[in-house]
Image 1 (cartoon, protein in one colour):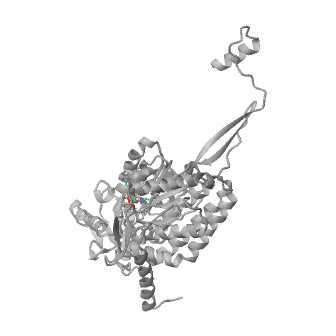
Image 2 (cartoon, rainbow, N blue to C red):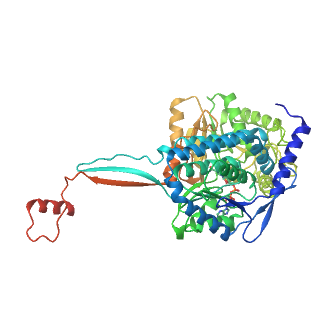
Image 3 (cartoon, protein in one colour):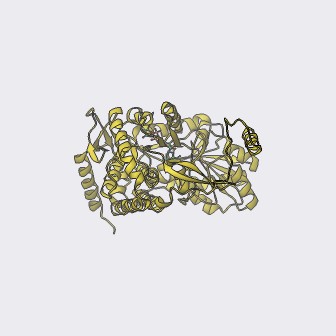
Length: 518
Ligand code: NAD
């Protein structure tokens, strides 16, 4: 159904009013709550900086209430049958689908991401719940490892209450990607969303409550990283932290959690290369390269923010990217035709734009964009003639900014591709089969796509190497994180146990003692 501009504006206004009247609160032990301190902060839309809602600003006291609630709720949720967990999580998916339009609009309001992408992000949120719901019954499955005289078998058991800390880019989808497997595994959760985009986490908590997730199983505490986030990583009842955010924050979190010996899954930053060889299907490569840097405002961990192009096609290929970049529609993120909306926050806009000046200082060419349009709206930008050592080729800019670097041969391409501290994703465009396999295996990245943009298949592992993270999500990999694997060894009654304190050792005993000493 096509909406008129008026209808669209009325709908957005109605959503804004409902959120601003309610305010964004914590959800602890099945109830909405203000902070113990009474403190709040404001969330504003990056579209024009106007107020959306006041947000409860949690600290260690709110986290303590939430973590204790999660600990109390854990035994009953752990012991619920996988079948019942599956039913509840499928209900969550149904309710996300029913409210997908509202979720997408509020996400666009809060983050500035174009509505065309937020609609699919909301749908993906439901898909995440459905995917892990279907695996709830088999989450505990293990291996049978028989040996002579023994049957060994492994089972997986949920680790306990876990903390989920999410960033501001596509916050709804990312929250579901963490919370759904945790719940399917039988863990309880305390979620701390990012302070720049807290609105849709509230919707998710509301939906899970309505779907019948028992009280205390999922708790939401809003607040700043250095207060609420830090307290969550330090809380003794929280057994593991699933974190998505910057590499420097990931490192801080591991330090903060050291005293309570937590398990971490860290999904961190990236400076992902897309390597385009002259033998590739260049039309397809062009579409993919443009999509993977300029969609989602370039605020995407798996964006191909470095394009490495073989020398002989470098001029032509980068000219085509520049032309596309200049044609991208930047504007009102609620307009279905818009491709890039405003960046998340004035501070982030300032950071992204600082690279425009830097590119010129470093001697690169600004082949497209390089200007602020207005407020948080920036031009899709392409830097050409860049060298791998430049900061524009090394640092995560996290905006619609692409750095193009030429290369002469495979070895040089690989050296440049791997010559950054990050290692999240890599993309490769070639029709040479041997090169595709060899190069893909040598790329320092957790995930490689050959002749494709990022197309996710949920059972496959997701995660990075080097400064891009530790651990994997996806399918069974998620259960390895949220669960402990236990080995149970059952004797079949045939093995001999060494006997101590027997004065006259029998020959068989001697043999057993000898084995023990081995
Ligand atoms: P960030 O690290 O600043 O914040 C992420 C979250 O951590 C927020 O909720 C924040 O409040 C919290 N936090 C901050 N300091 C903390 C502390 N000391 N203790 C506990 N929590 C703390 O990241 P951001 O700017 O919100 O997000 C952008 C980053 O996220 C980029 O680097 C991007 O690449 C990364 N990211 C990675 C993936 C991935 O899958 N690898 C996905 C999305 C985003």
